Length: 165
Image 1 (tube, helix red, strand yellow):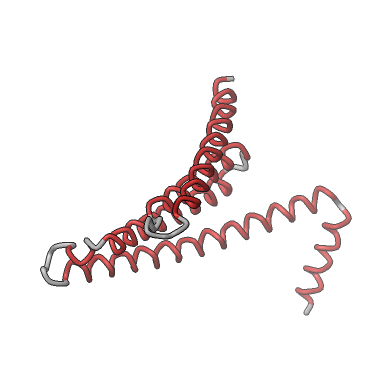
Image 2 (cartoon, one colour):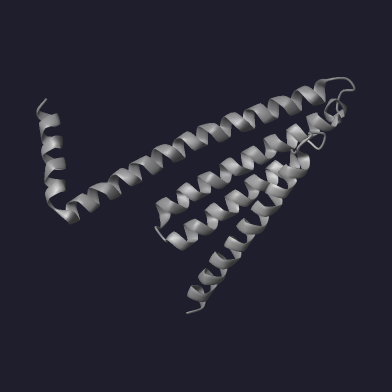
């Protein structure tokens, strides 16, 4: 109980002093980022484990040693989707670790944009071409690719100017 009173007193003190409050916020952000990074590691390990299980099952299904069970288009596209899910999770982990390493907003924005571009690419790869609204989805994804790519180019160009100066 005494510990709780001390913590509450510190929080109240943080509220009275802007510098202390900003330090407190920085500590909370750091703690939250570390927790997110640990959670993302669990997600990545789980996704890799699932991917390995699917590959092992496919390799052990007759004919043994081939990926014949995965040659059906939807299964193969699903497998690509799983690979890209792991890649996106790794990119998100990279974003978190970049945030922990340095708080340079322009670099973090660049990483987030790359992650978004990978996510859109995943959607394009796993797109069901037999769906009745495929054309609308393709148009939407094309617009997303163009806008995200343009955003990336703008941020990258600004970062390149800062790196040169």
